[in-house]
Image (tube, rainbow, N blue to C red; front, side, top):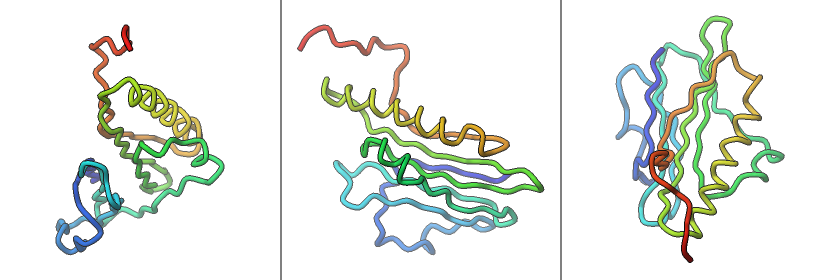
Length: 142
């Protein structure tokens, strides 16, 4: 299966799809408008031979999400099977306040997984989670 995912692509809507084309692939992109500090943005290349569709998150789920996290989900059909490919970008954390938001972002991921759990034959998630599981992330001082 031909699927390529990118996070932090730093592109604006002013960059045309034609400037990003790859032979043999369809481009699906989600640009950030006015990104803080220039980061963010997602794109996915799907092999032209694959049937695919953008997956929209229903408002009942999106209301539960914190706006910091970025995501893009695409349903890819191969034969009689349905595969969900997703990209998630969680901005870096640097302060106690943003750590709290990051914890919220982990809850976002849980909410999304819960929503997708039984809807697809396979689920593949990639991304930049900005999480160092080897580092102590608890704050001992204010």
